[in-house]
Image (tube, rainbow, N blue to C red; front, side, top):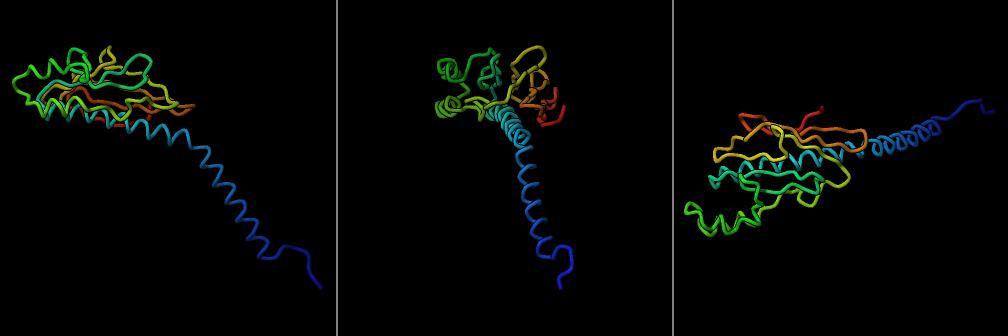
Length: 168
């Protein structure tokens, strides 16, 4: 005669199904946060790349974040995009033609945009940060990224130029 209750196999089967459903729910819930984290890390990499270009070429180079944030652009200190500054760069006696060619093909990782994330950039009242030839930024500041309810900041320290992704 069989007693009332569940067998061990039935209990394990139910627990397995609940575990799979819970795992799927957690993954779907954190998609915005993961996507925003990836975007923030790309913006941080763009800031570091601008700093490295400035140091390598001993030339003030910055990153400009336009108002609609379709994507940042590498610029000279006067705000001219590198791609539009070929004549200016070739006129410099301290840059050889190969260095100019390398500069002209540089583009930020987020140049095509940030996907669904929105951003607000602020560097001392400007949406432009310029790194001097020694890598120091013109001003410290933050790029605040938002996607859904998730918010992350990409901070650039004012004196050292250290870049970090932080929560608000």
